[in-house]
Image (cartoon, rainbow, N blue to C red; front, side, top):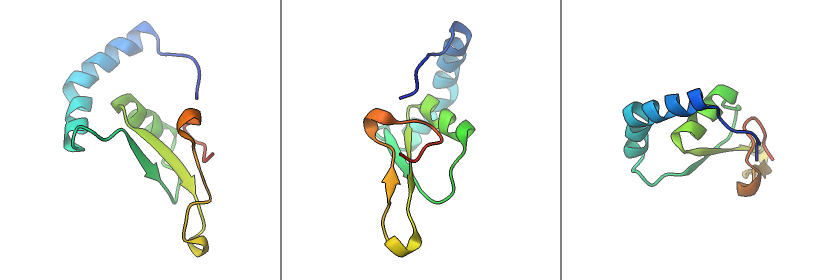
Length: 85
């Protein structure tokens, strides 16, 4: 889990975006989606932080096509943007 927190200005911006944008995105996902898994190419830090701001945790995974399954993935208690476990 990444440490630290947002400052006052970022909290204010987040509240405005939550009202105008993030709430609509959550509603478009059914209103109950809290996590998703990403595989293949990494989504990038900006996108990872964007989805975290929306309230959606993106668990980045890694696996080879030949293995037919993920080899590594972030844990719920150790989520870190840009890491695959």
